[in-house]
Image (cartoon, rainbow, N blue to C red; front, side):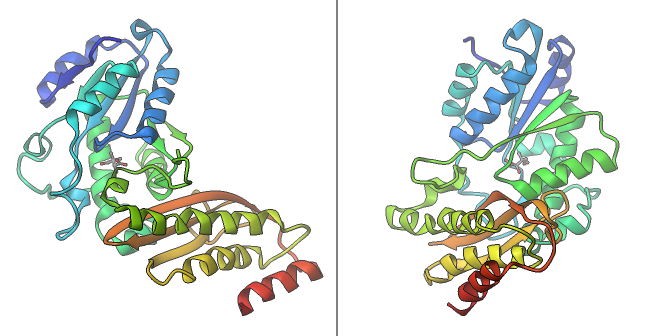
Length: 310
Ligand code: PAF
């Protein structure tokens, strides 16, 4: 595969954009690309069409200062441009837009930004105030600059994905959003650029997070019949696993509606959780299906009380 064009300036992007064969599929990233990103790039190439002359994959690499609070890891966030470009070349990426911060925010912090609304103030939004404001602002800018037909996001950042879909709907953006399931390493940890901060001991501890989510999933799968307490039982199963590991600092564990991040309804839902391990904050989620509302059958109720008593 040939090397993608590397565009550093908005003017270069503007000059190149008209020559990109349609459909143009955007993968927004902050670089430090890993196996999860590779899955996004492959999904983007599939959406654009396998023939590079019949569709384009555009990747943005930009560590967006707006989505980091003072004291977070903006300065030490991994930057691996050479390896990122090699992965992009191997996956048939047409062009990489990698601007410096001054190109994206010439006047420093922008005065006008995107308010993510109520969904942006819970869970990640509560623990990282301003985070989704920064994410949606840069995503909107990238959509304007690249004018993609399709944009691809990972399901690991489930709340970000739900908010991007909401941004598109609420502001009538003409872009289709595609999502790609979370990629996990062999030990079960969801791939993330921040995993490289983890020591071997931290990593062993971090595996409690996917284990907790699997416990919640197993609890959901064991529900049969009606159960209006199903979401609480699923949450309790996951929370019990996290609680058993006191070295983990748990920000939240919850069962939510995947579109609103409000309380889960019967049907498809997500177990979402965030923990900090040795100074590294990790988020993860898994899908579950909650049974219809109604009184639990006796076994289900007894199981739930058992878990809660434990
Ligand atoms: O998911 C990410 O890597 C970032 O939040 C994004 C969407 C590229 C915006 O900076």
